[in-house]
Length: 314
Ligand code: ASP
Image 1 (tube, rainbow, N blue to C red):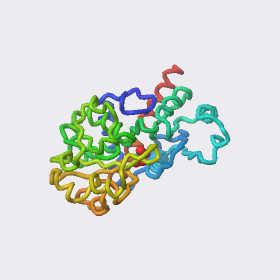
Image 2: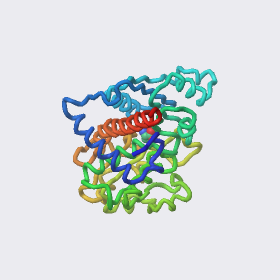
Image 3: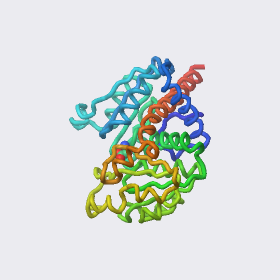
Image 4: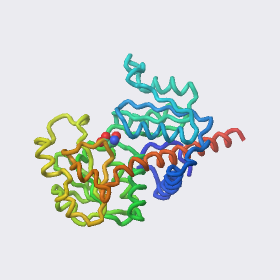
């Protein structure tokens, strides 16, 4: 697979998705054993540049890089020269001059990571750009679904909540659609983007109807940082109509799994007891799969980079 960067799910072929998931599956099993480190990325310099807050994603990229033996550097973007007016591209070019092998970038603007990838000569991995894409989240969600349902096709999957502002919804919609699942988008009309029907998903504004007989319930946080007005009447009202509780979940299949990319707002989009119910919730497994998927993605990108360099030298 000749992937140079991982900027989104959109350009991936279903076979490439399966290859990443297969390798991630192996890493997930290794991560549970005592021999979970390797020297796959020995000699590689990985720089994490997070221009937006992150807990899970940044921590798991750091752990993934370290488990593979990379030299990992976390740029403290709050303390960087961006604060002195330097542009994203100038910062990227400065770091590029230090010859990193991999930049892991999260940025509040959709498209910023693609732009950056065009300016540097190392591999770039999108860790979330605005409301555009979050490819490793969709891949870790896919791996979690495949491990708990035994397959990743012909499932009924409901993605619920703030669809408009969510890059997680977008990347998942693309990935799960490519794998031929039936996708439902459930949420208030104010949080449903115009033209969403083109993606081939069914749209519901009522949780009971939207969750009927689904295999997977994926809940999303209200992305307030990307809202520029009032999209919901109140959190209380939102929880009442769209928050996942036992009554609403009872409309899904009895073995339906509950997912959430985190961070969770308990009592807003999800009831705390549902989130903690390990017979339904795979939220902690999603976090675990995040490390494995990121190890697989970095492994593939670095292998391709080595191969391209060898070919260029030959
Ligand atoms: N952590 C995910 C993201 O970065 C989801 C969220 O923030 O709600 O998009």
